[in-house]
Image (tube, rainbow, N blue to C red; front, top):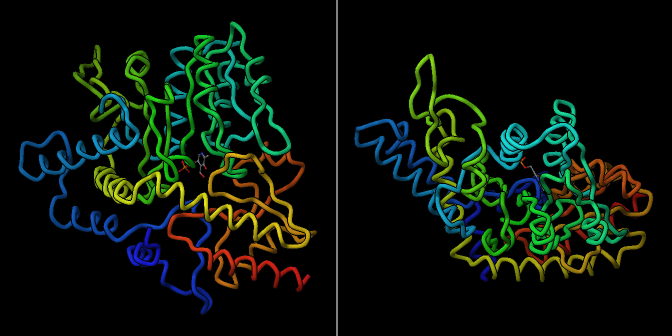
Length: 403
Ligand code: PLP
């Protein structure tokens, strides 16, 4: 991959902050957008904009084609069987809340159990806790090793006749661990239990095939995969989505409404109430086209190499503690240095033009497991370089000497 050429597609990467060239290492929180994605948004507003689905006129039909074409692009990208299985949402968080609401309504009764892992993002914990408060369900937690690997035997031992659903992140946004979700899904299926995979940190970095994983539900956010904010996806197997009640009412989700009775639209529209973000879905499709053209396997290989290099360089710093040392890791490194508070380190790195994230990364239960309050997190993209990693290492050394 020609990284310098790729960087030219991302105008923001050539800006400076505090007079220093920007080093953007906060890709786990959101990724920057290539010009083609931003242009797609402007172009659609300037030349196609009209509400989708219900218009007979030219613009509405063209906008509908772009929106439904985007659904097909997403389907292909994650290798779903049918576009009926692609529900557009606002993001991973809404996808999980949709599932918690609908699955909870249909299948969860007092005393039923949902399994989550200790390394889940709050978005895959709190919706289940809300259900616990409302319905009296029980949350069981998969533990992990100190290196940040889920304990598969302990996981298998959590199943019983009340287990109804497993929710697990594909890649940890803190530890970078790539969880063995295919094997975990097989274990759950052996007990007749479906699985939701939180793919927020996987889809931007590796080829994801929902059929090969045999995932029942799979959630991700557009803005983390070079697309716009406000658009996300819930993939669900048709046989499951068919059995779930609607999430919200109104707009495209109806078939017929009378004051006596309303019937609901077919999949996936049953779950898409109100005007969808059709500009956003089109822009997301352009983002997926962009990364597909680079090649997800090439992206994965480059980021792995960059992460290996960064891990090695960071390890050479005195007092460095890296959290998450699983053999199979994504492009995320969480760390602390000596007694320096993560917030101080992040703030001082920022002054050097280096954008990292600090804090609990919306994974407070994981922080409790690790016995810390927070970390500094550097998360990489294919547009990052080894020179930028060197800048980070030099920056940390500088801060370390100040302390
Ligand atoms: N799950 C994981 C693993 C994440 O990393 C994030 C975001 O950081 C989310 C869920 C929530 O994503 P969003 O805020 O786009 O809904």
